Length: 260
Image 1 (cartoon, one colour):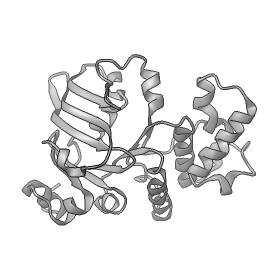
Image 2: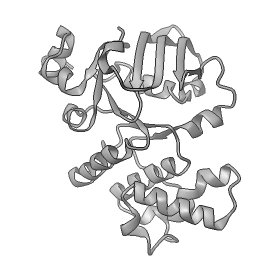
Image 3: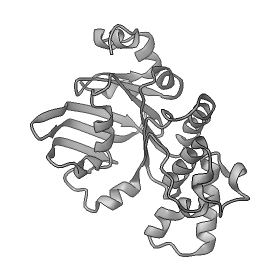
Image 4: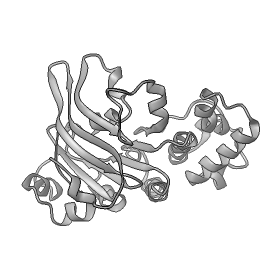
């Protein structure tokens, strides 16, 4: 399934070429070729177990942590292979940040959560760290709520605030790509709306890839959508086109609720 026609004129952030992945003998991803457009939100949708999160974790090599995992094909980030020439995986993960389903702030202050990645990189200058904290918290739409309590333990924040803090922590090191694995599934509707609005703002600076079970969310926030089924990408198109005029019967069956 190729997707080169889907976004003529838009730069490519990530390109997958015939990517397949196995966990021991079980094939989880099958021959996926896909281009992820730069500074856009791309949603991955499909029934549980279709390979969405596995594909998402390929982009920062998180699957490497799983015994028996092997891949064929290639993934290019800014036209450079991350499978065959990745070098330092920590360097890759600075370029490709990730936000998980459940907010996972560290049991430290709000300030220390945001600067965590910068400290790992050896940044010590207080002024640089202070500026990064404000910039990241503003980017995560959290600055006005916490600017007077940066020394407060992050675990005292609400779930929605914690998830925005985790996003601030991810964007503080200025990655090129931000992976979002069902970032609102543990949140209430109001917090979900705040995060969705935030995603739309963040794409000005980052390429976002969103895994979601919520088709309405994909329709609301994403520019492009890939529908996955049984480890394959069945269809990839601009979101409006995929939801209003799907080309594949399986896509139409899924979005109209006939299965999945």
